[in-house]
Amino acid sequence: MLVFEIVMGHVLITDLFKEFVQTQPRRGLLSNGSNNYGSQSTVVLDHINLEFHDGEMVCILGPSGCGKTTLVRIIAGFDKPSAGTVYIDDKEVAGPSPNNIFVFQHSGLLPWLTVWENCCLGLRNMKDKEEMASRVQEYIDVVNLSGFEHHYPHQLSGGMQRRAELARALVVNPELLFMDEPFAGLDFLTRLKLREEIVNMHEFLQKTVLFITHDIDEALVMADRLVVFSDRPAKVKVDAKLDFPRPRDFQAESELAGLRKEVYQELGVHFAL
Image (cartoon, rainbow, N blue to C red; front, side, top):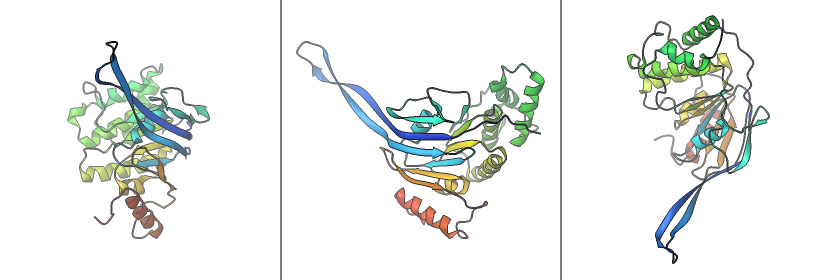
């Protein structure tokens, strides 16, 4: 039976602004013979104010390149804002934390390690090896990979690799779990199955999850909260709490169907296409 240390995951984002500045040489030289350099700035996040509550599954949508990944990198402490602040559980984020775990678009499993060995990585400093082994096995069971503990990543399907990554992330009991398009490259049926598994897992484990996706229906089916960004520089166009029961049915829930239509329109596409 899984026993959890209480880990919070409240996120408060206040007036967050991010600008990238690049220094570029101009053509020619100055009169003193030195190079003439100029700078070009790109505003990515334009004064973002958001709040995510403990245990929420937050899906973040927006056009490609609008700043979704930049936002979660700042929340995780891997990047710094140009202005504004991010707080996790009332503490200002000043840098990376082992309590913030990423699951990326492409497999991050170490290919020379088995599923079991990959899942042990975050617990390698535990002194009680029996407890470590018990925790690893329990999370491998949670993601339905029992029997594949000693398989290498190349021996697993794409969906199984994603589940192994989830086990590796969850075994350290993270404060926040970041999932940056984790279903990229998976076939449609595998994607649907993993979507269902992650929703069920989230309801059981109650971790705060920030999930980046480009799939509107996926976000509406999975999320407790939905955030939609505009094109760059990103502003919050939609911030909606989704209290609809699961499994969700766009035809049965008129309010959900209306939100779906609104999100498609905000992103400049028609849902009937």
